[in-house]
Length: 194
Length: 259
Image (cartoon, rainbow over all chains, first blue to last red; front, side, top):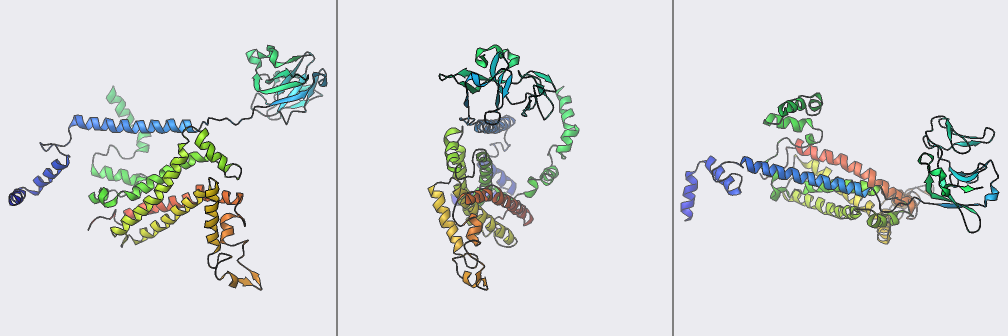
Protein backbone atom coordinates (compact mmCIF):
# COMPACT_ATOMS: atom_id res chain seq x y z
CA UNK A 1 0.00 0.00 0.00
CA UNK A 2 2.61 2.49 1.12
CA UNK A 3 4.97 1.31 -1.56
CA UNK A 4 2.28 1.83 -4.19
CA UNK A 5 1.75 5.46 -3.17
CA UNK A 6 5.44 6.20 -3.29
CA UNK A 7 5.48 4.79 -6.78
CA UNK A 8 2.66 7.06 -8.03
CA UNK A 9 4.37 10.03 -6.41
CA UNK A 10 7.54 9.27 -8.29
CA UNK A 11 5.83 8.94 -11.67
CA UNK A 12 4.35 12.46 -11.35
CA UNK A 13 6.44 15.39 -12.57
CA UNK A 14 7.11 18.22 -10.04
CA UNK A 15 4.54 20.37 -11.87
CA UNK A 16 1.91 17.65 -11.65
CA UNK A 17 2.71 17.19 -7.99
CA UNK A 18 2.26 20.92 -7.35
CA UNK A 19 -1.09 20.93 -9.16
CA UNK A 20 -2.18 17.96 -7.11
CA UNK A 21 -1.23 19.78 -3.93
CA UNK A 22 -3.22 22.84 -4.99
CA UNK A 23 -6.23 20.64 -5.74
CA UNK A 24 -6.03 19.10 -2.27
CA UNK A 25 -5.93 22.59 -0.72
CA UNK A 26 -8.89 23.74 -2.83
CA UNK A 27 -7.08 26.43 -4.85
CA UNK A 28 -7.77 24.51 -8.09
CA UNK A 29 -10.90 22.55 -8.99
CA UNK A 30 -10.81 18.90 -10.08
CA UNK A 31 -10.08 19.89 -13.70
CA UNK A 32 -6.98 21.74 -12.55
CA UNK A 33 -8.54 25.12 -13.28
CA UNK A 34 -8.43 28.03 -10.86
CA UNK A 35 -11.55 29.56 -9.31
CA UNK A 36 -14.27 30.11 -11.93
CA UNK A 37 -15.37 33.56 -13.10
CA UNK A 38 -18.74 33.30 -11.36
CA UNK A 39 -17.23 32.15 -8.10
CA UNK A 40 -14.62 34.89 -8.30
CA UNK A 41 -17.27 37.59 -8.82
CA UNK A 42 -19.31 36.24 -5.90
CA UNK A 43 -16.26 36.25 -3.62
CA UNK A 44 -15.32 39.75 -4.75
CA UNK A 45 -18.84 41.05 -4.15
CA UNK A 46 -18.91 39.42 -0.71
CA UNK A 47 -15.57 40.95 0.18
CA UNK A 48 -16.68 44.45 -0.86
CA UNK A 49 -20.04 44.05 0.88
CA UNK A 50 -18.27 43.08 4.10
CA UNK A 51 -15.91 46.04 3.77
CA UNK A 52 -18.79 48.45 3.08
CA UNK A 53 -20.77 47.08 6.04
CA UNK A 54 -17.77 47.48 8.35
CA UNK A 55 -17.17 51.03 7.10
CA UNK A 56 -20.86 51.91 7.42
CA UNK A 57 -20.90 50.50 10.94
CA UNK A 58 -17.86 52.55 11.86
CA UNK A 59 -19.37 55.76 10.51
CA UNK A 60 -22.64 55.02 12.36
CA UNK A 61 -20.82 54.37 15.62
CA UNK A 62 -18.63 57.46 15.26
CA UNK A 63 -21.52 59.79 14.50
CA UNK A 64 -23.52 58.35 17.40
CA UNK A 65 -20.58 58.58 19.79
CA UNK A 66 -19.90 62.27 19.25
CA UNK A 67 -23.45 63.23 20.32
CA UNK A 68 -23.87 62.51 24.06
CA UNK A 69 -27.24 61.66 25.59
CA UNK A 70 -26.86 64.47 28.10
CA UNK A 71 -26.52 68.14 27.22
CA UNK A 72 -24.89 70.05 30.05
CA UNK A 73 -25.80 73.51 28.71
CA UNK A 74 -27.37 75.22 31.67
CA UNK A 75 -30.83 76.71 31.11
CA UNK A 76 -31.15 79.51 33.59
CA UNK A 77 -33.87 81.79 34.77
CA UNK A 78 -33.30 85.10 36.54
CA UNK A 79 -35.44 87.02 38.99
CA UNK A 80 -34.68 90.61 38.10
CA UNK A 81 -37.01 92.66 40.33
CA UNK A 82 -40.44 94.26 40.18
CA UNK A 83 -41.57 96.10 36.98
CA UNK A 84 -41.47 99.34 38.96
CA UNK A 85 -37.68 99.10 39.14
CA UNK A 86 -37.44 99.69 35.39
CA UNK A 87 -38.48 103.28 34.56
CA UNK A 88 -39.89 104.20 31.17
CA UNK A 89 -37.40 104.71 28.28
CA UNK A 90 -34.47 103.11 30.09
CA UNK A 91 -32.11 100.20 29.48
CA UNK A 92 -31.04 98.27 32.57
CA UNK A 93 -27.56 96.78 32.24
CA UNK A 94 -27.39 94.97 35.61
CA UNK A 95 -27.62 91.51 34.01
CA UNK A 96 -25.45 92.18 30.96
CA UNK A 97 -22.54 90.04 32.17
CA UNK A 98 -24.26 87.62 34.57
CA UNK A 99 -27.30 86.83 32.41
CA UNK A 100 -26.34 88.10 28.95
CA UNK A 101 -29.49 90.21 28.60
CA UNK A 102 -30.71 93.79 29.07
CA UNK A 103 -34.02 94.70 30.66
CA UNK A 104 -35.56 97.34 28.44
CA UNK A 105 -38.61 99.48 29.17
CA UNK A 106 -39.51 101.30 25.94
CA UNK A 107 -42.56 103.00 27.44
CA UNK A 108 -45.07 100.36 26.35
CA UNK A 109 -43.38 97.03 27.06
CA UNK A 110 -40.76 95.63 29.38
CA UNK A 111 -38.71 92.92 27.72
CA UNK A 112 -35.43 91.02 28.12
CA UNK A 113 -33.16 91.77 25.16
CA UNK A 114 -30.40 89.30 24.31
CA UNK A 115 -26.89 90.82 24.25
CA UNK A 116 -25.84 88.59 21.32
CA UNK A 117 -25.42 90.64 18.12
CA UNK A 118 -27.38 89.02 15.29
CA UNK A 119 -24.46 89.58 12.90
CA UNK A 120 -21.66 87.41 14.29
CA UNK A 121 -22.37 87.12 17.99
CA UNK A 122 -20.38 89.91 19.63
CA UNK A 123 -21.82 91.92 22.50
CA UNK A 124 -23.01 95.44 21.54
CA UNK A 125 -22.73 98.39 23.98
CA UNK A 126 -25.65 100.56 25.10
CA UNK A 127 -24.86 104.16 24.08
CA UNK A 128 -27.28 106.11 26.31
CA UNK A 129 -26.40 109.49 24.67
CA UNK A 130 -27.37 108.27 21.20
CA UNK A 131 -30.02 105.92 22.58
CA UNK A 132 -28.81 102.95 20.58
CA UNK A 133 -26.94 99.66 20.90
CA UNK A 134 -23.66 99.73 18.97
CA UNK A 135 -21.67 96.58 18.24
CA UNK A 136 -17.89 97.16 18.49
CA UNK A 137 -16.99 94.31 16.09
CA UNK A 138 -18.54 95.41 12.79
CA UNK A 139 -20.57 98.48 13.65
CA UNK A 140 -24.09 97.10 13.71
CA UNK A 141 -26.52 99.48 15.37
CA UNK A 142 -29.78 98.64 17.08
CA UNK A 143 -32.53 100.87 18.44
CA UNK A 144 -33.72 100.63 22.03
CA UNK A 145 -36.31 98.09 20.82
CA UNK A 146 -33.47 96.05 19.29
CA UNK A 147 -34.25 96.91 15.65
CA UNK A 148 -31.26 96.63 13.33
CA UNK A 149 -31.02 100.05 11.65
CA UNK A 150 -27.36 100.28 10.63
CA UNK A 151 -24.42 98.00 9.91
CA UNK A 152 -24.42 94.39 8.77
CA UNK A 153 -26.76 92.81 11.36
CA UNK A 154 -29.57 91.08 9.42
CA UNK A 155 -32.28 90.94 12.07
CA UNK A 156 -33.55 92.42 15.32
CA UNK A 157 -31.90 91.40 18.59
CA UNK A 158 -33.58 88.38 20.17
CA UNK A 159 -35.74 88.55 23.29
CA UNK A 160 -36.07 86.08 26.16
CA UNK A 161 -39.30 84.89 27.74
CA UNK A 162 -40.44 87.03 30.66
CA UNK A 163 -43.19 86.44 33.23
CA UNK A 164 -44.30 87.73 36.60
CA UNK A 165 -43.60 85.59 39.65
CA UNK A 166 -45.99 85.28 42.59
CA UNK A 167 -44.01 87.88 44.55
CA UNK A 168 -44.46 90.39 41.72
CA UNK A 169 -40.91 90.15 40.38
CA UNK A 170 -40.06 89.74 36.69
CA UNK A 171 -38.61 86.31 35.83
CA UNK A 172 -36.43 85.98 32.72
CA UNK A 173 -36.40 82.45 31.29
CA UNK A 174 -33.34 81.92 29.11
CA UNK A 175 -34.68 78.62 27.82
CA UNK A 176 -37.01 80.35 25.33
CA UNK A 177 -36.00 82.87 22.64
CA UNK A 178 -38.36 85.09 20.62
CA UNK A 179 -37.56 86.16 17.06
CA UNK A 180 -38.87 89.32 15.41
CA UNK A 181 -38.69 87.81 11.92
CA UNK A 182 -41.05 85.05 13.03
CA UNK A 183 -43.54 87.63 14.31
CA UNK A 184 -43.02 86.38 17.87
CA UNK A 185 -42.69 89.82 19.46
CA UNK A 186 -46.50 89.96 19.58
CA UNK A 187 -46.45 86.85 21.76
CA UNK A 188 -47.53 87.98 25.28
CA UNK A 189 -44.82 85.77 26.79
CA UNK A 190 -42.14 87.92 25.19
CA UNK A 191 -42.98 91.11 27.14
CA UNK A 192 -44.70 92.55 30.15
CA UNK A 193 -47.08 95.40 29.42
CA UNK A 194 -46.31 98.56 31.35
CA UNK B 1 -20.97 55.58 -23.00
CA UNK B 2 -19.63 53.54 -20.09
CA UNK B 3 -16.31 53.07 -21.89
CA UNK B 4 -16.08 56.81 -22.45
CA UNK B 5 -16.71 57.45 -18.76
CA UNK B 6 -14.10 54.85 -17.83
CA UNK B 7 -11.55 56.42 -20.14
CA UNK B 8 -12.18 59.94 -18.91
CA UNK B 9 -11.72 58.76 -15.30
CA UNK B 10 -8.63 56.66 -16.00
CA UNK B 11 -6.99 59.36 -18.11
CA UNK B 12 -7.91 62.29 -15.87
CA UNK B 13 -5.12 64.35 -14.37
CA UNK B 14 -6.65 63.96 -10.91
CA UNK B 15 -6.48 60.17 -11.10
CA UNK B 16 -3.00 60.18 -12.59
CA UNK B 17 -1.67 62.63 -10.03
CA UNK B 18 -2.80 60.37 -7.19
CA UNK B 19 -2.12 56.94 -8.70
CA UNK B 20 1.17 57.12 -10.62
CA UNK B 21 1.06 53.49 -11.69
CA UNK B 22 -1.87 52.22 -13.76
CA UNK B 23 -3.80 49.00 -13.26
CA UNK B 24 -1.36 46.63 -11.51
CA UNK B 25 -1.50 43.89 -14.13
CA UNK B 26 2.21 43.05 -14.17
CA UNK B 27 4.62 42.16 -11.36
CA UNK B 28 6.63 45.29 -12.09
CA UNK B 29 3.60 47.52 -11.59
CA UNK B 30 2.70 45.70 -8.38
CA UNK B 31 6.20 46.36 -7.06
CA UNK B 32 6.02 50.02 -8.16
CA UNK B 33 2.73 50.52 -6.31
CA UNK B 34 4.23 49.28 -3.05
CA UNK B 35 7.38 51.36 -3.57
CA UNK B 36 5.46 54.52 -4.47
CA UNK B 37 3.11 54.50 -1.48
CA UNK B 38 4.33 56.18 1.67
CA UNK B 39 2.64 53.64 3.94
CA UNK B 40 3.21 50.51 1.87
CA UNK B 41 6.86 51.26 1.14
CA UNK B 42 7.70 50.35 4.72
CA UNK B 43 6.61 46.87 3.77
CA UNK B 44 8.67 44.50 1.61
CA UNK B 45 7.55 44.40 -2.04
CA UNK B 46 7.86 40.66 -1.99
CA UNK B 47 6.95 38.39 0.91
CA UNK B 48 8.09 34.80 1.28
CA UNK B 49 5.36 32.18 1.39
CA UNK B 50 6.50 31.40 4.93
CA UNK B 51 5.96 35.06 5.80
CA UNK B 52 2.20 34.71 5.43
CA UNK B 53 2.13 31.32 7.09
CA UNK B 54 0.11 31.79 10.29
CA UNK B 55 1.62 28.75 11.93
CA UNK B 56 5.05 30.32 11.59
CA UNK B 57 4.47 33.99 12.46
CA UNK B 58 1.15 33.76 14.40
CA UNK B 59 0.65 37.23 12.88
CA UNK B 60 1.52 38.43 16.39
CA UNK B 61 3.31 41.58 15.21
CA UNK B 62 0.51 42.44 12.80
CA UNK B 63 -2.09 41.93 15.53
CA UNK B 64 -0.08 44.12 17.91
CA UNK B 65 -0.11 46.89 15.30
CA UNK B 66 -3.83 46.35 14.66
CA UNK B 67 -4.50 46.72 18.40
CA UNK B 68 -2.39 49.89 18.42
CA UNK B 69 -4.64 51.29 15.67
CA UNK B 70 -7.78 50.29 17.60
CA UNK B 71 -6.37 51.98 20.70
CA UNK B 72 -5.53 55.13 18.75
CA UNK B 73 -9.04 55.37 17.29
CA UNK B 74 -10.90 54.64 20.54
CA UNK B 75 -8.43 56.78 22.49
CA UNK B 76 -9.03 59.83 20.31
CA UNK B 77 -12.78 59.32 20.74
CA UNK B 78 -12.44 59.12 24.52
CA UNK B 79 -10.49 62.40 24.50
CA UNK B 80 -13.66 64.16 23.29
CA UNK B 81 -15.26 63.53 26.70
CA UNK B 82 -12.46 63.00 29.20
CA UNK B 83 -10.99 65.85 31.26
CA UNK B 84 -7.69 65.10 33.04
CA UNK B 85 -8.65 66.92 36.23
CA UNK B 86 -9.18 65.68 39.77
CA UNK B 87 -12.82 66.85 39.64
CA UNK B 88 -13.57 65.65 36.12
CA UNK B 89 -11.66 62.43 35.45
CA UNK B 90 -13.68 59.84 37.37
CA UNK B 91 -17.06 61.44 36.61
CA UNK B 92 -16.22 61.72 32.91
CA UNK B 93 -15.11 58.09 32.82
CA UNK B 94 -18.48 57.03 34.30
CA UNK B 95 -20.37 59.41 31.99
CA UNK B 96 -18.68 57.99 28.89
CA UNK B 97 -19.99 54.57 29.87
CA UNK B 98 -23.56 55.56 30.70
CA UNK B 99 -24.39 58.86 28.98
CA UNK B 100 -22.74 58.44 25.57
CA UNK B 101 -24.00 56.21 22.74
CA UNK B 102 -21.50 53.39 22.15
CA UNK B 103 -19.89 54.12 25.50
CA UNK B 104 -18.40 50.64 25.08
CA UNK B 105 -15.60 52.62 23.43
CA UNK B 106 -14.08 52.94 26.89
CA UNK B 107 -14.22 49.18 27.49
CA UNK B 108 -12.87 48.55 23.99
CA UNK B 109 -9.92 50.79 24.84
CA UNK B 110 -9.21 48.95 28.07
CA UNK B 111 -9.61 45.45 26.64
CA UNK B 112 -7.50 46.29 23.61
CA UNK B 113 -4.83 47.68 25.92
CA UNK B 114 -4.65 44.42 27.85
CA UNK B 115 -4.71 42.46 24.60
CA UNK B 116 -1.90 44.55 23.14
CA UNK B 117 0.40 43.91 26.10
CA UNK B 118 -0.28 40.17 25.78
CA UNK B 119 0.08 40.22 22.00
CA UNK B 120 3.39 42.12 22.09
CA UNK B 121 4.77 39.51 24.49
CA UNK B 122 3.51 36.69 22.25
CA UNK B 123 5.22 38.42 19.33
CA UNK B 124 8.47 38.61 21.28
CA UNK B 125 8.16 34.95 22.25
CA UNK B 126 7.63 33.92 18.61
CA UNK B 127 10.59 35.97 17.40
CA UNK B 128 12.73 34.40 20.10
CA UNK B 129 11.60 30.83 19.41
CA UNK B 130 12.19 31.15 15.65
CA UNK B 131 15.59 32.76 16.21
CA UNK B 132 14.51 35.81 14.22
CA UNK B 133 16.56 38.11 16.46
CA UNK B 134 19.79 36.77 14.97
CA UNK B 135 21.92 38.80 12.53
CA UNK B 136 21.08 40.66 10.36
CA UNK B 137 17.98 41.38 12.45
CA UNK B 138 19.65 42.11 15.81
CA UNK B 139 19.02 45.87 15.66
CA UNK B 140 15.33 45.35 14.96
CA UNK B 141 15.18 43.19 18.09
CA UNK B 142 16.56 46.12 20.08
CA UNK B 143 13.91 48.45 18.63
CA UNK B 144 11.34 45.79 19.48
CA UNK B 145 12.47 45.73 23.09
CA UNK B 146 12.11 49.52 23.31
CA UNK B 147 8.63 49.20 21.81
CA UNK B 148 7.81 46.59 24.47
CA UNK B 149 8.86 49.05 27.18
CA UNK B 150 6.79 51.82 25.55
CA UNK B 151 3.79 49.47 25.47
CA UNK B 152 4.22 48.85 29.20
CA UNK B 153 4.56 52.60 29.83
CA UNK B 154 1.38 53.29 27.83
CA UNK B 155 -0.38 50.70 29.94
CA UNK B 156 1.04 52.18 33.14
CA UNK B 157 0.15 55.79 32.34
CA UNK B 158 -3.32 54.86 31.06
CA UNK B 159 -3.99 52.98 34.30
CA UNK B 160 -4.11 56.23 36.30
CA UNK B 161 -6.57 58.06 34.06
CA UNK B 162 -9.87 56.64 35.49
CA UNK B 163 -8.71 58.25 38.79
CA UNK B 164 -10.36 55.59 40.95
CA UNK B 165 -8.89 53.92 44.04
CA UNK B 166 -7.29 51.14 42.00
CA UNK B 167 -5.59 53.69 39.75
CA UNK B 168 -4.36 55.99 42.50
CA UNK B 169 -2.84 53.25 44.64
CA UNK B 170 -1.32 51.48 41.65
CA UNK B 171 0.45 54.67 40.63
CA UNK B 172 1.39 55.37 44.24
CA UNK B 173 3.19 52.05 44.31
CA UNK B 174 4.63 52.54 40.83
CA UNK B 175 5.97 56.00 41.48
CA UNK B 176 7.41 54.95 44.85
CA UNK B 177 9.55 52.50 42.92
CA UNK B 178 11.05 55.47 41.10
CA UNK B 179 11.92 56.93 44.48
CA UNK B 180 13.99 53.83 45.29
CA UNK B 181 16.17 53.94 42.17
CA UNK B 182 19.92 54.29 42.70
CA UNK B 183 21.27 57.81 42.07
CA UNK B 184 17.99 59.26 40.71
CA UNK B 185 15.62 58.38 43.59
CA UNK B 186 15.77 60.30 46.85
CA UNK B 187 15.28 57.13 48.92
CA UNK B 188 17.47 54.96 46.71
CA UNK B 189 21.06 53.85 47.19
CA UNK B 190 23.87 56.38 46.60
CA UNK B 191 21.50 59.40 46.72
CA UNK B 192 23.30 60.51 49.89
CA UNK B 193 26.64 60.67 48.08
CA UNK B 194 25.31 63.18 45.56
CA UNK B 195 25.70 66.40 47.48
CA UNK B 196 27.71 69.56 47.28
CA UNK B 197 28.80 71.12 50.56
CA UNK B 198 26.10 69.33 52.53
CA UNK B 199 23.35 70.34 50.07
CA UNK B 200 21.77 67.19 48.62
CA UNK B 201 21.43 67.11 44.82
CA UNK B 202 18.80 64.37 44.85
CA UNK B 203 15.97 65.04 47.29
CA UNK B 204 12.18 64.44 47.30
CA UNK B 205 11.70 67.80 45.54
CA UNK B 206 13.67 66.93 42.41
CA UNK B 207 14.17 63.18 42.16
CA UNK B 208 12.79 60.74 39.56
CA UNK B 209 9.51 60.37 41.43
CA UNK B 210 8.99 64.12 41.49
CA UNK B 211 9.63 64.35 37.77
CA UNK B 212 7.14 61.56 37.14
CA UNK B 213 4.26 62.85 39.27
CA UNK B 214 5.00 66.58 39.19
CA UNK B 215 4.69 67.04 42.96
CA UNK B 216 5.71 65.43 46.22
CA UNK B 217 2.31 63.77 46.49
CA UNK B 218 -0.03 62.25 43.90
CA UNK B 219 -2.54 64.82 42.67
CA UNK B 220 -3.80 66.89 39.77
CA UNK B 221 -0.29 67.45 38.45
CA UNK B 222 0.25 63.70 38.27
CA UNK B 223 -2.98 63.18 36.37
CA UNK B 224 -2.08 65.87 33.83
CA UNK B 225 1.45 64.54 33.35
CA UNK B 226 0.25 60.97 32.85
CA UNK B 227 -2.47 62.18 30.47
CA UNK B 228 0.00 64.03 28.24
CA UNK B 229 2.45 61.12 28.34
CA UNK B 230 -0.34 58.65 27.56
CA UNK B 231 -2.05 60.58 24.76
CA UNK B 232 0.80 62.42 23.08
CA UNK B 233 4.39 61.74 24.10
CA UNK B 234 4.56 57.94 24.26
CA UNK B 235 2.25 57.24 21.27
CA UNK B 236 4.36 59.59 19.12
CA UNK B 237 7.55 57.84 20.17
CA UNK B 238 5.98 54.44 19.61
CA UNK B 239 4.69 55.45 16.15
CA UNK B 240 8.14 56.60 15.02
CA UNK B 241 9.79 53.44 16.36
CA UNK B 242 7.10 51.28 14.74
CA UNK B 243 7.79 52.90 11.37
CA UNK B 244 11.48 52.09 11.80
CA UNK B 245 10.61 48.57 13.02
CA UNK B 246 8.50 47.78 9.92
CA UNK B 247 10.97 49.41 7.54
CA UNK B 248 13.87 47.47 9.06
CA UNK B 249 12.04 44.19 8.30
CA UNK B 250 12.34 45.07 4.63
CA UNK B 251 15.92 46.31 4.95
CA UNK B 252 16.98 43.21 6.90
CA UNK B 253 15.78 40.85 4.21
CA UNK B 254 12.06 40.43 4.84
CA UNK B 255 10.22 38.42 7.42
CA UNK B 256 12.43 35.60 8.62
CA UNK B 257 11.47 32.14 7.45
CA UNK B 258 12.40 28.57 8.19
CA UNK B 259 15.95 27.92 7.00
